Length: 179
Image 1: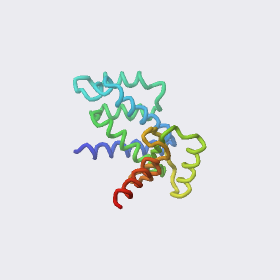
Image 2: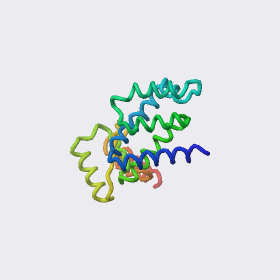
Image 3: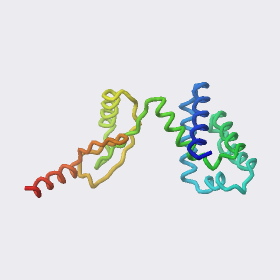
Image 4: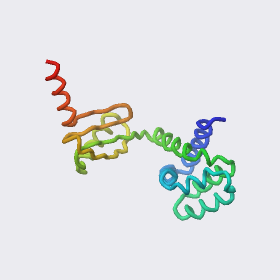
């Protein structure tokens, strides 16, 4: 069985159970936390991926580490993944879960890149506009790029609005050079 099938099956099962128990938002928070920890703490990634460690040892470490902060459903899910020897696929399962959660809840990720940090009012205006125009919720993350000089770049999936001063100057330059 290939990795994507395994990841999708486990992620769908977790999302289905979380929806049944009305804790999908809490499970999503747990999933995002665990995913970030796996990607930033090499020892945790090694614990999960190195087959020398016994499943009971892995489960003991994870339970001690997350019992106080994770939902019991998430802890049971981790136990199932480890018991079935699927911990090698855990990062992929977590990513698929987040994608499925966003799809179910009509959430799109949007990246706003500006020359300076945008004000809260500007961010709220952008969020409200996108939500109203496209009829879905957004998760807006900000990036600051001082090369832009001014303006902004708004990315949503495969779409991009480039209203930066740098882009305008480049367009003017191209026009002048083509004359």
